Amino acid sequence: MDAYPPETLISEHLVIFVVSTTGWGTEPRAMSSLWNMFLRSDLPDDLFEDMDFCVFGLGDTAYEKFCWPAKKLSRRMQGLGGYEICLRGEGDEQHRMGVDGALDPWIECLLEVLTQLYPLPHEQDNIPAGSDTSLNPDPLDEDTKFHTASVKCNRRITAEDWFQNVRHFEFSFKDDIKYNPGDVAVIHPSAAASEVDSFLVTMGWANVADDFFTVEHTMLDQTLPDHLPKIVSLRILFTRYLDFNAVPRRSFFQLLRYFATNELEREKLDEFVSIEGADEMYDYCQHVKRTTWEVLSEFRSARVPREYAFDLFPPLSPREFSIASSIEFHPREIHLCVAIVRYRTKLKIHRKGVCTSYLSGLKLGDTLRIGLRKGFISLPTDPNTPVVCVGPGTGIAPMRAVIEQRIHKGHTNTTLYFGCRSAHKDQHYYKEWESHAEERKLRYRVACSRDGPEGVKRTYVQDLMKEDAQYIWTMLRQQRGILIISGSSNKMPTAVREAVRGAVERFGGKSNAEVVEYVAAMEREGRLIEECWS
Image (cartoon, rainbow, N blue to C red; front, side, top):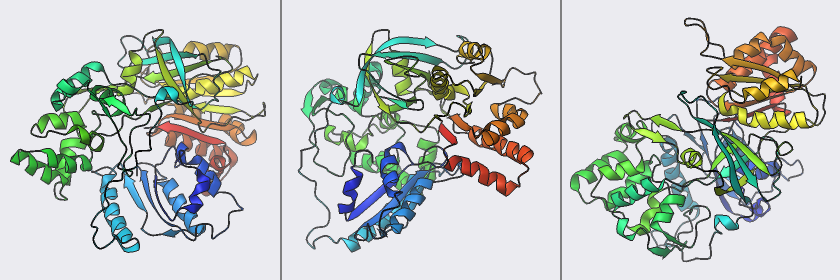
């Protein structure tokens, strides 16, 4: 959505919105400018009276505000006169088929409505491929939103014998970059050369891997990877632009069937894409996180023509990392705190993250392009306003930026609640926090959940906040402070909110309903900010 000029929306007659959910029911960053425009009070009620629209939301029912941005967008569009031609769809990651469980039937319904509202000519059964080749995305080096960075530091900050490898990165820039606490660094990864080589052999493309060809964007309803050059080879394509390690969705199996020549393989693919075979496909693919490459290795009769690469393989998406530094403390630098992804699937197969593996392999002096994207954190300008930061694990990254910024400005009423497993193994940046605390620039509280004796209840950040209930009440209610939560979007954000509600109920003398409304009001006023990820 951020690539679409919001002011041109009024000229559209049909718009299909696909909206993800971030944080605690917040709209995605790419939607922010459009949504802010929709919230203007001076917009007329009939602004979109000539527009048909529909909305499909992407979410997870594990969270309270499931598909919240999609619901709000649907209501607001109707309030501005738009006509919703199809019931809102809501894709749920908890469904056994993922978002496809709701997406497939929603698309069928939408297509039926569209053929009624916008019928095709009698002699035409489907829409032919377009012939417009004008789209030619600039390469990454020419994108002015990205800047060339040089690796200044790539250092492990967890103990060498610890199971998790968390690394501290420092990147230096010649450009005079600007960013604020809470902003994110955008990095386009590259797949490992050895994996690309093996994959090309699997596909039967090894002998033509370095032959260059021209990419023409003729199917206008198909999205090509960002920054794709017009002339490219298969090796470059699968190193930087297409993801062969993604877990495939149902549509992948639907298309793969056309390329399989073995009858047994075709029958198995037919089973997978049938309604009756949904559970079997889930068990085979999503449940065990089987990758596209692994599926292709098992369906060996399928020989995919090069021309269908963009149909079968999803783009290798850029990854976003919260910046762990303040530009005031570190001019022309960006610091990151990154957990290197390593795990074993239910099939006991070792997996590693594409982007974190790419980052961990960077050497001092290596260069890469890094983009900047605006985050959701907004710090108070009043030096007397306290800020309470809750950032366990790598959630410490944006908190480090916040703390450095406030110390630079001379603000000393900042509190950090950090959570880790072991004080000596994964207490990230603890020397910095202890030094700031000694200088009375920071109040530091740490919960080390695995350091206590066996049989004793583990201590987490929310437990420390419950112990500090009166302090929390003073900071957030009496001094109208700001609470920032960052980290994994599992049980932690909900537990932290419960701790705040407990403090308000206990020391504010409020009823349960008033407590819930108070915390909701904090969020509306921008005094409760959540920057969490799955």
